[in-house]
Image (cartoon, rainbow, N blue to C red):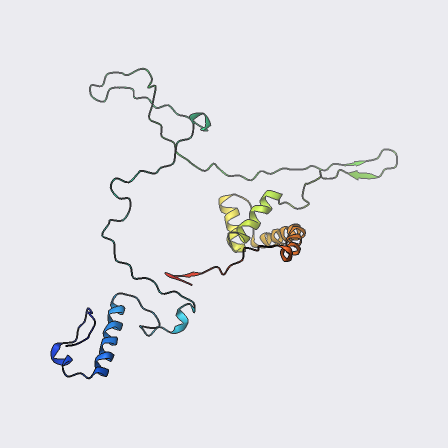
Length: 241
């Protein structure tokens, strides 16, 4: 009797009887390799893919059986939806009343004490808030010297306010957007004139502003008992590493 494992492809009995144990083992491994390819699990171990296509510490993916359930919510599951906010917190409330009966056409009057509430969330029109500081230069009537008014404390010398600079830096640092994409986001969605060169300028200014706080944190690291450092895994396609 053959000791072949069950595969989608099997060795015909007439050939199995003529095989030596070494040939049979080779054919069984070949059939396993073909079966894995048919399942679409191509790896450097079972295909001609170069080893460089797989992460060196990639974990093998467990073979999961395909579920017979349909995609999406299953029958009987609890419905999840965004809860309605109080009516007095809405920016606009529009009462809608029918004017005539849908059956006979008679005119309708009155109000529903518990109307059906339908709320639509929408982004407001975003326009930059521009403040113009008019610095008057006046001449002294005694000595003739001219004096120009100073900007208030906290007003930047450039044309970018602190909130705009913080948002620009967050887009590039936290959300990892390029200088060009950041400029396009500010110009297209926020109506803020911007170019990649301006994002670089803002990035340098924010970096210098945060450097003292950064250096304080760096100096405190060696004295901390717990650093919360681990080997964070990565994910490439469907493989974890």
